[in-house]
Image (cartoon, rainbow, N blue to C red; front, side, top):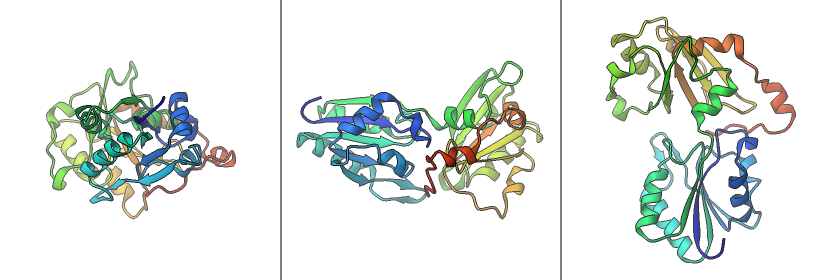
Length: 261
């Protein structure tokens, strides 16, 4: 690609080897990279060593750079003739604000492409041995933001409490007690299995199991490190028998992504 151009790239859930080939090619040819908090150093190490790296990550209640400024920077770098990569954890279009950035770039007439990444729901569930769908447990799956605004519970809880589905909550660690309480209040059995996957697909992955009734209590006093993913439904109960990922072996081969906030 010649001239100014922006690639909105999904970095996947953590394991560098889950990058797509196209994502790797764009990283290796990038001149400017704006990356999020959940992009590991191992993935950044794969980038063009001459590329200028800019951290524009967001944590809970702490946005290092406002979204409007990120949009403006993407436009400005592209107009200066640079090959720009906007690198996001997971997939740009699943709770990644990739749609907002694409809208801003299209509105300014910027040449842009979107390179999907493996989203946390599929990556972390697979590494936890939890199939998101299963004929005996779930015929559908929902991706939901667990970042509850002002601690409120403004979700369609009756629909979420319907049987025969898997619920995957992104950014739900702080809202876990509310999530569990509301699902039970709206009809899901209290003994419904729940799994919280911590730093999934990395050598620091931990899977915490429980039910809607007791998982929040089980986690009290533990130090949990984001990113975390919450999986609710019968499939979560399959982890104990289907877990295949060996974190010790993963660390031994050298792609431990470390602590990412």
